[in-house]
Length: 504
Image 1 (tube, rainbow, N blue to C red):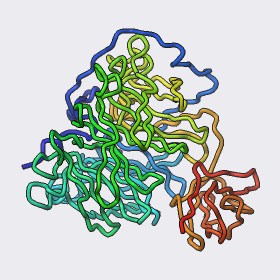
Image 2 (image 1 turned 120 degrees about the vertical axis):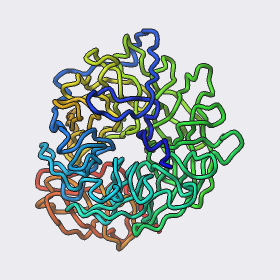
Image 3 (image 1 turned 180 degrees about the horizontal axis):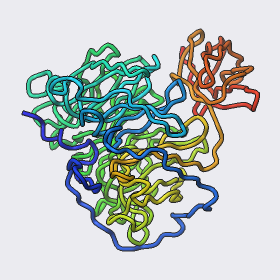
Image 4 (image 1 turned 90 degrees about the vertical axis):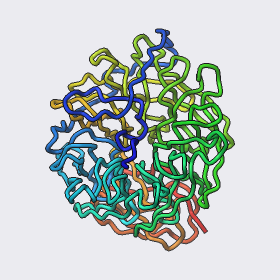
C-alpha cells in the first residue's frame, strides 16, 4: 500500500497549500498567531535602495508548477532546479535557467508508464562529476520515491526506487542528498524503515548501490527522533548532521550527529523549555559556520510560536537567536522552512519564511530575511502574491553575489515563481569539491573567469586551465595548506566563499 506520507511534502506535513486551483494538500495547517509584541532591536528594516528584488519566472503549469528545493549553480553558470508539479505529465520537472530568467525544461517526470521514473522531485545537488543528483518523493518502481541522476543536457537515470524491501525497510519518500567526501551520497527518508516507519538514513553510490545506515525510532519512546525531512550536511569532522521533525526526549524533534558507519548521537531535543520556547519541529537543513557551530530553523515554537532561528554547538548546547512573530501580525515572518539558512559571503545568514510579512495574503505571503550570527534580523522582502507566496525553499548565492530563490505559489497562475534579490554583495568563486589533496584536479566555479591570470590555494600558486567563462580546472599544488582559494582576473581578485581543506 502506498505510504500515507507520500501525499505530503517532507517538512511541511502540518501545512496545506494556500495557492488555490488544483493544488495538492500537503499537510494540516496549524498556525497559531501569537500576541503582537514588537521587538525593534531584533528586526531592522533595510534602506529601500539597498535591496533590489526581481521576479524572473512565473510558472504556469506547462513549464512546471510549485517549485520545491533550493536552486543550484551548475558548472556552466546556469541555475538548476525542480518543480513539484506540472510539466508535460503533471509529475513535476527539472529545469535550468539563465541568471536573467530564460528557462528551459530538461526533464518531465512521469514520462514512463506508472511513473517508474519518479514523480514530485524534491531537491537536486551538483555532483563532483558535474552531473546533478536528486530525489523524488513519489513514483518509482514501488511508488515511494527514487534517487536519480540527470546530466546538464537532461538525460535522466533512475538510480534507486525505494520500498524495494518488504515493509519498506529501505525507507520511503526521500528528502534531498549531500555528496560526502568519499564520493557517495547520503540522505534521509521521511517514512519506511523499521516497524515504526519513521524514516532512515541511507548511503547510495553514484552507481545506485544503497545501504541503510540508521533506522529512526530505534530507541525507547523514539528518543532518537523520527520523520527526518531535510537534507543532511557533512560537518568539518566528517560526520553527518541533520534534524528530525518528530519525537526526541520532549516530542519536538531533534538535532543529531551520525558517523559514516551509522552511530547516532542526539545533540538536542526540542521542546525542552516551557511552551517550546526553544522551538518545535526543526525542518531546515543545517549549516555549519566557520566557528564550527551549526545554525538552523524550527517551523514552530519559540517565544511567539512562529518558529525560530537557533545555533547549536557540536556538543549540543543550543541558543535561540530569534523567535518569529515578534511583530504585529507576524510582520517579521512566520514558519521558516525546509530550505534552511545560507551563510553568504558577508558571513550573515539568509533564509525565507512560509507565512508572515505584509497582509497581502490571509496569513502573510512570506518573507526573505537576513540574520547576523548574534541574532539581529532584517526583513529584506515581503511577498505579495503577485511576485510569489509560500516559500518552502531557501536561497542560493550565485557566484556573481546575487541571491536566487523560488516560491511554491503565487505569480500569474498561482504556480510559483523564481526570483532574484541583490543586497550589493560582490562576486566570488567556489570550489567543487571543497577539499582535496595535492595533485588532484579541482573545479572552480565563478563568473567572468575568462582571462584569469593566476589561481592560488591559500597563497600557494596552482597550475590551472580556464575551461569557460564560468569554470576553471586547477591542480591542488604541493605544499598547499587549508585556506581560501583566490583567482586573479582582469577585473580583480576573486576569493572562495569557504576555505578549501587540504587532506593528507
